[in-house]
Length: 412
Image (cartoon, rainbow, N blue to C red):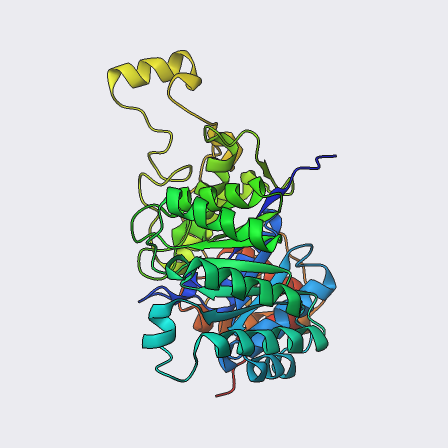
């Protein structure tokens, strides 16, 4: 058994990824992302906003899936503001929630120019600690505290804030490089100081405004591990996220596994890189955003060679020009495209076409009544997604019709 501190992955596609301007995911698509993340061995999915009312049914339905074992062992964590009132409302709307991240700004810039006198440095800590204690009393099993704009927060105040969070009952601190202004050098130094001072696990949340998001995430994780504590890196599938995005899930995994100098650092053994191709392709389809041709691991050119020297070297021995194998990412199987007749299930489908689709998926129904119920849900799902359903979505609806019905239901 390895006694070294580990690096865990907390994916925030369903919280920060969906905040990407001009894109969105349906609640069914968010649910599928959670399922794929679970199959990939990701520690936690920050699956949404408990105080956003159009999320309520989706959140409770996914918590029900967790109880059924369909979303296990992954943890489902909600993001809320670090206020006592928000914590109370969270447990009122999503009573089965067990994991929370409470967020509040900590930099002078934001305390002065965002709160505009509503809060000062003292009251920020007071507000946060009251929220942590309330979450603990109401039954939260794990509590993370987010220091928003930590990269521009005075180090002495950041340590004071984190120590107060720890004393109040927080399980870890989230260091947020909200503006993406850190470099690998600055984030290592700052997080090492923080970890040495507070002696607790730290979560690293970075943005890609300078193109350094993966490097910063690794440097921050190394600093926490070097201090003797587990590190938690925030990722998004395909690097989605506000502005220039968050740390790409697959790139982070590859960098930990194959980056020079990372050999002594331990990525959680549960991570299954073979899911990479499936989850990235699905997220690309769901978001409606193509995977860049040069995306590490999953881009169309990630294993493509054209120049004479490279092609010759790769054919002689793939290690000449390939750092890792495409099979490790679940790539290599041919993709079959139907060029003849194809029956699809959409919002106007009838029972005969619908049955044909599910027969090809090898899904059987007990009787005509069950088939008709699932057909109705598939119609709603097409309206819900506003695009054709993929096979895994169709299978999910047939397997969990009651959960699907909750996911599709929103009451303004």
